[in-house]
Image (tube, rainbow, N blue to C red):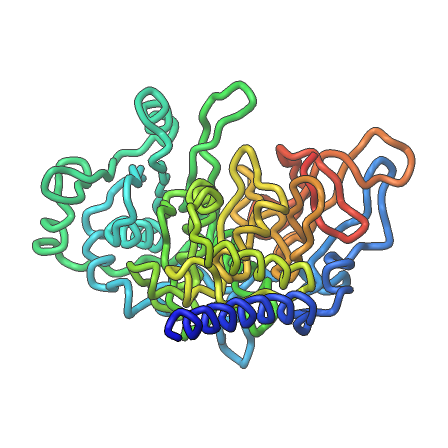
Length: 435
C-alpha cells in the first residue's frame, strides 16, 4: 500500500513538472517592447557625403537636436549649464570629502600619474583634486606592468606618482594619511574647464604609448550619455545599488559609470548579492558561460532562453547571486562576444545587458546594445550610439555605404569627426556590427 502511494505521488509530481514546462513553453509572455524598437534602433540622417554613410544617432537624441552634453545644472537667470567636476563634487559630497580634496590641493604642485592597481577611494579624491586645481592626472590601469608601465609613466611626464605602498597610498614619498592629517586646506582657484585634467595611456598601431587627454566637457558628456541613454524605467537612479565587480576604475568605461553613480546619488556596494546594477568585465561574464548547472538550473535556463526568444526577459535568473541585479554593464574585449553568448548571459543573470564598444579616442562608448535586443543573430552585434555621440562609416565605395571604418563625433572627445580603430557595418536595423 505504501509503495503504491509513493508511486502515485511520484507520477503526480512528474505530470505536474511536465505540465508546467509545456504551459510555460507554449504560452508566450508579453513582449518587453514593440518589435520596431529592435528593428529601428538608430535615427539615420537623410544627408550623406560621397563615400560615406548617413549619420546614425540614438533615438534619445534625434537629428535636429544637439547631442547630449551636460548635467543641466541650474545657473543664474534660470538658465542651465553643462556642469563640470566641481558640480560633480557637490553632487557626490556624501561620498567624497571637500576638506580632503582641499588638503590634497595644498600638496599637489605638479601633474600626477596614478598607478590604479585597485579601486581605492583615495585615488578618486586625488583625481578630483587634480581636476579642481587645474592639474592633470594620468590614470594607468593594472594592465600596464613591467616595461609597459615604465613607458606609460614616462609618457605621462608626471612630477608626482601615486601608488599603493606597504602602509597605504603614497604620493611620491609622502603618504596620503600624512597629507590628510597635517596639511592645511587650500582654496580652489578659478576653474579652467578647458584644461585637459584626465589622461589615459593609449597605444598606436606601432604599439607606442601616448597619453589621450580629456577635459571637463568630455567627462560630463560621457556621464550624461550613460545616465540618459536608456528608457526612463531603466535609467540608473538614487534607489540603485551599484557593484563594480573586478572592474578597475582605472579604465574609461568603469570610471565614467562610477562618476555617473556619484552624480545621480546611487549607492556603491561591495557585495554582488546587494547590487541592482553591476559593472563588470567581459572576462568575468565569459566565465559565467561555463558555469556547471544542476538539472533544475538547466531547466530554468531553457525556460529563460525560450522566454527571450519570445521577446520577454525572465527577471528570475538562473544564478542566485544576481537575484537583485536588473542591469549588467560591461565593455567589449577581444575577441568580442557573439549575440548568442550575450543572450545566454541574459538568461543566466535575469538582467538587462548593456554590452558596450569603447574606442581609445573617446570617453563614451561608440555603440552599445539596445537593452531589448534579445535576438540571436550571426556575428558580433552591438547597437546604436549613445545620445552623446553620432557615427557614420567611410568607404571607398561610390554606392550606398553601410560598411567601412567607423567615424564618430561627440562632445565626449575632441572636436570634429574622428576616425576610430573599428571596421564594421551599420545593419538595416541601425545596430553597429563588427566586421
